[in-house]
Length: 118
Image 1 (cartoon, rainbow, N blue to C red):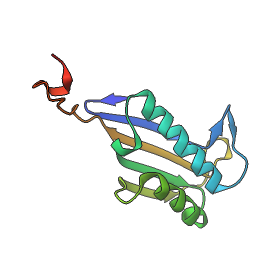
Image 2: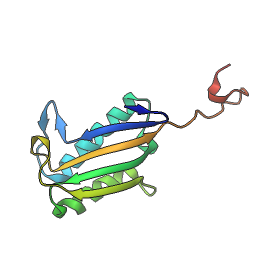
Image 3: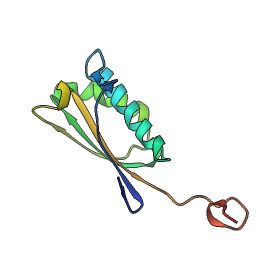
Image 4: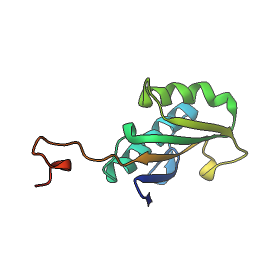
């Protein structure tokens, strides 16, 4: 969903082919992040374009496992985020992510035209 220069990516959980991945919160986080990356890629964006993430966990006991996997993707300059515990998520998921990404202006290509268009 585009909102000007912002792209909203609705909730991503650890689904593959309509089923939750095997394992716990860490494995579901890996898959949810991969699903998020795929949606961003389809919109011509990357995880480096994400400016805000909302995270839903069914228990804060999973926060450490989630955070390790999240940090591996977003690195030393992660986007702003909110993390809350909720009672339940779709399909019995343990983790859900939603994100906002910023579509940045194309860099000049040296041709004197922004975005490389002549």
